[in-house]
Amino acid sequence: MHQQARNATGGIILDADTLNKGLLAGKVGVWRWRVDTDQLEWSENLESLHGLEAGTFDGTLSSFRNDIHPSDTSDVWQAIQSTLETGDPYTSVYRTNPSLSTDPVWIEASGSIVTDPEGVRYLTGVCMDVTARRAAERELETRLAQQKAIADFGTFAFGEGRIQKVLDRAVDVAADVLDVPLTKILLFAGTADHLRLASGRGWHDGLVGNATVGTELQSQAGYTLVAKSPVIVEDLRTETRFSGPELLHEHGVRSGISVLIPGSSTRPFGVFGIHDTRLRQFADTDAEFLLSLATIVANAARNREALDHRQLLVREMSHRAGNMLQLVSTIASQTFSSARSPEEAHSSFSERLGSLSRANYIVAHGGWTSTRVRTLFGDTLKPFADRISMQGRDVLLPPDLCFDLGLIAHELAANSSRYGSLAGDDGRVELNWNVERSGSELATFTLTWRDPINTEPDPSIPRRGFGSRLMVALIESKWSGKIDVERAQGYCLSASIPFTPA
Image (cartoon, rainbow, N blue to C red; front, side):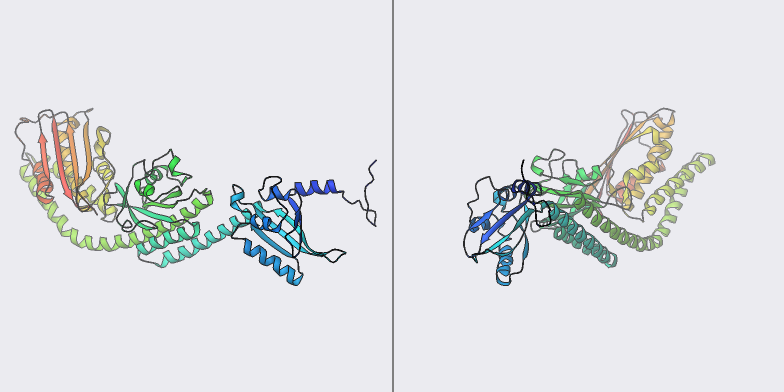
């Protein structure tokens, strides 16, 4: 029967086999270096701990130094030299050489000077795998750095009245904290049918402030707008959800994150993105950090927008009051002079005044700024909402144009309710629109109203009622647009209106 060794007090001393098994289970290795020589001895499991193949360690100090990450070699050797000079124990944490394994392993080494009976000095100690512990420490350090960055940026954004300064600081913070070469903030521009690179870091000269990205699903930004949640890209080259815009491919982007910048209504302000030319595995916490920055940007934009709205409304109230009274007077004069009876005059005037009021409310409700065209037509044509098929992108249009489009939409619906499909109980009409860009400074809004029924007394003779004259005055005279009307099969009005996007 095996006799177990005991110490002076009777305690059982572990045998070598049991001790080795314990070291293997705990991922701990033992080593001994004969000072002032190249001779280094270590337990067999230290090869696997350092990512070496079994039997490849040659027992030299030089070989051990080659197994250390080049960036950490100096720190490890300084710690060893200090122990040799002072005799004090040392502890050092280093990474293995990345050329020797897929991912570097974090090793903690501790040692002290031991002298044998012959007076030979050895530096003896242990090495253990602390990769998991180091990852947890780095995660904590990262989270603390992110929280501090968010607090500092929030303080800055709260006191900064210039939104561009806030955008520029945001992309810098994201680049520094997340250690990425490319950051960007894309904001809706013009008619809101595309995004503009409003601020960024790392992009080619001349792109920031000028480059645009589409909102279609093929772009990462467009996909983010639809997903409405953070989008993490592991490798753009193998991405299947979208292809990504040329802007990213031209800069060699491989990995990244993009999040929405919340807006003041259902439409977001834009998209905040970070990108790396290296393959990166971004964590959910990184996406949460970017989303926090985006939220601060959104709050700053809302505050700036609210201030601009108040200033604009004060100016517009004084300017619009006289114009509104003149328009009401014109509508009243024309309606009552062309009506066939007092009842018809009263009804027409009430309807037009109501349309005028709705158009004014929709535009003024947004602070007399760019207005969503679908909201405009939806509210203006609400009495016939279930019988009008609307087709068109929900773009933003200047307030003056939206106000006039509300009046035009009312006249088209009123005409259809007298002579067309809306006069019956189940007839339907179509309203389609689109925005065509003619360069960065000019765009054209096109509108088509198609009614399959026309019961005018003589459809071949264009009518010259007030509604027709109003549309001509607004579209052709005021906006220098063009109207085409076809009466061969029902009633179809096509209008094109040039305008300058906001």
